Image (cartoon, rainbow, N blue to C red):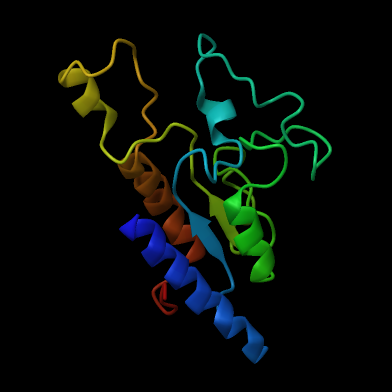
Length: 156
């Protein structure tokens, strides 16, 4: 509850700045789980894992077709990007060689905050997990960072 309240406050604070006319943000890079996944789970799921959100009714209310998002249209981060005048983020696993200077989505449905080997070592799960934890997503971002940042321009 506290985290949700803090994130809501942060979002309201950021959105308040939009009325000034000059953009606060020029790009958006996201990490997370199914609440903001733009299609990475569909790409990385092994054949044995059933994937249902790559067919209707997923995506039907906004895109008119399935996009890999776990909703019938946009996910939370799509609304945030739109509010900041940024393009909708695409899944990072689609093609990292594309221009990602305006942002990309690293989130994967079912991602965990703790590395999956912890769950497997502790025998907390009866099946093999997809390795898509927050650390994995951070590694993906670190791999991409040199292409979007240089030493003369800071990250912030």
